[in-house]
Length: 182
Image: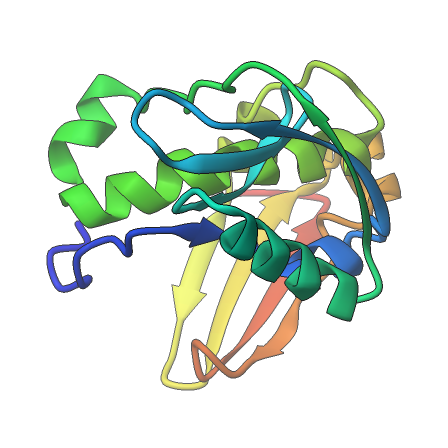
């Protein structure tokens, strides 16, 4: 998967818009200059904010991008946050570019789900491994699940809400629940 993606860029920047949408305006960030010469910014042991070539100018440009989005970063020096490894079976199917992106973005996705669910530990199966039926047409993708698939913390976080029109997919996406599921 991801064979048509271009090669990874020489740097990474978690878009400030993603952080502001998640209502993260002030972050305690760790600044690291690892042995490979790249500058890294990460939020505690949670997720990577940015990787860039070293130097004061590169750091200033990174900080300016977050400041322009109304964010404040409090920097401290620290140790490098290792990027997570991917599931071996999954990694074998991914292009190098897609694996590069996933290793940098999945910790942020995990952080967002932890925050939304209000739980430090959660099982991805709660969101992804539910019994249901998917029907797809030229204009819609509809997911129908049984009522017993409702998870109250997922519901409270609004994660089972129908997303509606998704321009990137050119489809209306709906989630529905039904009492008697056959």
